[in-house]
Amino acid sequence: MITRGLIDSTQNGIADPAALPFAGVVGALLAIAIGIRVPHQFATWVCTRAWSKFVLRGQPGALPDVLMSPAHGDAGLHWVTISVISLLTGLATALLTFGVPAAAAGVEWVRDRFLCSPLSLMALHALAVFMAGIIPLAGLGLLISCAHHVSCRFGQWESRATAWLWIGASVGLVLSGEVAPLMGRGDLILPAASIPILIVALICAGSVPARSLRISAERDAGQPPLPMWSDRRPTLLRAAIVLAGVCAVCMLAVLSSRLGHVYGLPAEAVLPAMFAAMGVGVLAGSRARQSGLRTIGGFGAACAAAGVIAAIATIGAEYWAATVPALTVLLACASVSGLGFAMAYGQQILLHRVASRSAAGVTVLWRLVMGGAVVVWISFGMADALLLAPNAPEIIAAVLILMGGALLRSEFNYSTRKRRLWLCTVFATLALLTAFQFSQLRRFSDADPEQQRLITNGSAVVSF
Image (cartoon, rainbow, N blue to C red):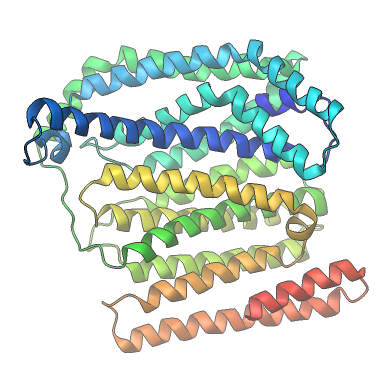
């Protein structure tokens, strides 16, 4: 809701290319990423310096016990901290109504005095949203990090919180689309966005004693989880998790734009549904496995399956969007849900292979948000070349399938026969996808030369 309010308040007076609203999304994501990463790094630096100066007094020694055993923390203090941060963030959001006009005036001043290209206007709009909303959005980023901590019974990191954040974002999309027509004024979105944050502050402050006793009892009943497996191929695993999240954001952007611009489906209904489907997929992927541990090979199979589902959704949108729009939206939701499942599956593998789940979780979440900002910028900065190109979703699906094959190949627990069977399946799927791409050349033979060039390049990429 804050992002929607900032976009509507700062784009007045700017030309209206389709990519401008999403430039504001980039600015908002960058501000949220700062709130996720900077406070965590600052707190770690302060604690390390304080321990070295006041306890060790410059002498070498072991790390403090509180860093190695997070279960010793005060659960009640955590909830009080979240309440205070929510209160300050809600007040900063409510006061945005007075600060946004200055950012909008600055944008209009630059536009009137300088000759700006469409790319420069996008950068200007993203900068205006970032500067206007840095305080409340960074506070929201800090709240997102805190939510992952307090959701874990040991105060470390719980990836299921990401699922509920996606679902909450879908509700925020619906509410932000209803507030302006209901009130008759578009500038009321920002004050309305402060209400849920203030409600969070009240809930946390009112339930501190009960939650503190319950969480303390749960932590006393067991020990914080230790690494259950060695962190083999750490670079590949972390890069695959981030790439899966980036592909999820890119697929969401591409499918929502195609369903809205090409097939005429209402974006007000499609985008919230896809956000909610992403949350459901992350929730399913974050479910603890009862028998055995999750493996890198299973992560690769999940990525390959998500790529296949994305390809099927693209083909379905091509053939059924005009006749059965509900089925097309359902396939698009299934596509992003599969991507969310794969991303959460990989996060579960990582959390079981590191000693500090909090540090690993914050790092991966920050990279996902930054990667989402980059992919939104690239996607909508090249709207004509990427979003509306018929081969864009197939390229994303091919990337996922190839990444799944790389992960399956690195799984040392699989036998040689099983690994070869998985790899043959991956290459057969890629061959079918390539054949479908080249078949589109005949279907679009009457298109303009630029469209034919896009299809040919996409087919070449998938074939490569």
